[in-house]
Length: 479
Image (cartoon, rainbow, N blue to C red; front, side, top):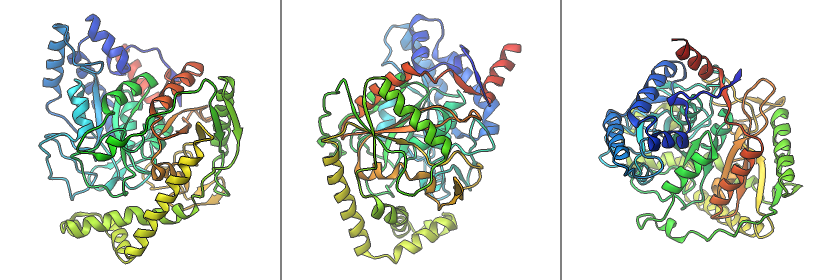
């Protein structure tokens, strides 16, 4: 399933190593782009991570190479190739959202997080696959088909940022942008051995994108193979903008303690979780204790039962709004999502008001919880990856579950608006990655990234690569 590699092929380098090569002149952005496109051509027919490539990538790489030659790069990612999830708006490229509804839409401007990456010199290679309207935990749609996990192409990389994580895990690009409205960065990162951050609501300002369907839960973030690369991308994307008022009222993060107060929550009530995932999460709790933090076991100190009951209707209400505002939805959207919207249309305004009030209540309770805690550690997913074309696993640890049974650990974090980072833990005995999530207080995004860096130094994960990549590297060396 896996292999170790110290490969230095240009496409497989992390973003920091690419930037060092550009600075010393041992490589340039055009060479890296060529290697990137060649790997995409070889591996993407199997994985289906990308839905379209950016025709302007070469001119962007050439402009970056000229800046490096003149000693004036725009920043630490100047010339680094990145991928962007297909529900984020990139100028001159379709933002289809995995749906025929938006397939013909070509935006003229980048949305804000993408614009910030472009302004920093990152080279946008292409758009990555997502389920239609990004409301499911696997990655596939009628437009572009199913995306597969580089660690085992028979299995899903999760969703909805499945194309982005597949591109990074397969070493096609070192960084990818995605969104997280209910775990859509964290769970795919966990399934592919990556580190991914769901920022605090407002920490990465949003403007100029597609409509929201999950209230204000969805945030933009990045996925990477190393914590250092994630930190660089986050620094570029983060910050206030007057067009996003939420971003102007960000709380100041607390000063990081030397000895963090960590609550380890292994299970949520009687909801099942794969035993291998439980063991891996326990090992991460032990690692945090080894690093000197105060780790205790306990239950989640938030009553999320009502939120879980409401969750299926939250996205459905958002879809119902789209059907009302965009008549073409009835002709072009897949029947599955139209049925969801139709069901939600009958719920009424009282139901929506009840959801909003429950979210407000949970945010208040969560804010109080973090007066006595610095972190909550949980598994990132309840199930190991399942067959790629199936929307969810029907069973977990011998117990029947519904469509979000695998996703129980993540949605509540979106509802309360707090930051959470997913990072690799001890892999499964079959070699598949397993991830955990660390949830912090409002505005503690940088502290989460710093702690992930501590953990990465204690138990490095980036030398593990999927066999599909190892074999590709070996084939290119043999040539």
